[in-house]
Image (cartoon, rainbow, N blue to C red; front, side, top):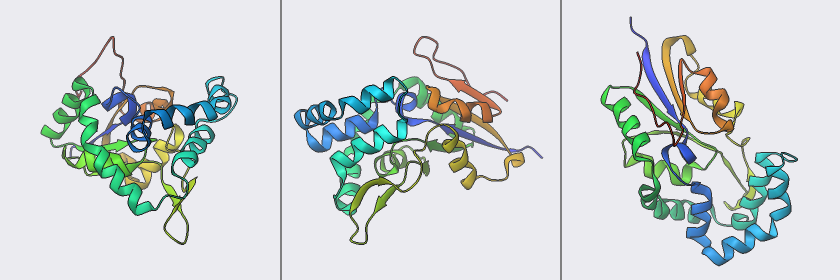
Length: 207
C-alpha cells in the first residue's frame, strides 16, 4: 500500500517574503513604536546576530515588550484582523507549490516559529487546517505573560512538534520546504527536503 503523502512548509521566508512577526508588530503597534522597540532591544538583537544568544531568547524578549500583559482574546482578534494582509507578501512560487500538493491529495502542514494566532486564520482561507507554531503562555486572568509556553518552534523543535501530530513516521512520505537554518533539521528529516532560494525557486513534488 502506498504511504500517505505529507508536505510541511515553513512560513516566514518560505511561504512569505517577509517576517510575519515583525509585520504583525508593525500592524498592531505602528511603525514608530516598532522602531523604538527594536532600538530598545538592539543589544540583544546584535547578540543574536553574533550568535551570542539564542533565537528563542531574543524573540521572547521582543514579544514580551510588545505583548506582555495583553488579554489573549484581544491578541487573537488582532491575529485574525492581520491575517488577510499576509496575502500581500506571500511568495507566488511557494503558494503554487502548496496548491500542487493539495491538488494531489497530500496532507499539508505549516510548521513555524511564528504564532498560530495569525497563521491559522490565514491558512484556513487557503485550505490548510494543520498549523503548528510557538505556543504562548497566559496567566490565570487570560493575559499574555510575555513568555512562550513551548520552546520556540525552530530547528529540532520543529521536528519534535510535528511528530507530536504525526508520530507513525514509517506510515508516510514526507516533503519539507524551508529557507533558513531553522529549517535544516526538518528538511534533513524529510524524504524529500527543499531549501527555498530566491535565485533557484524550485521544484515540483517528487515521487
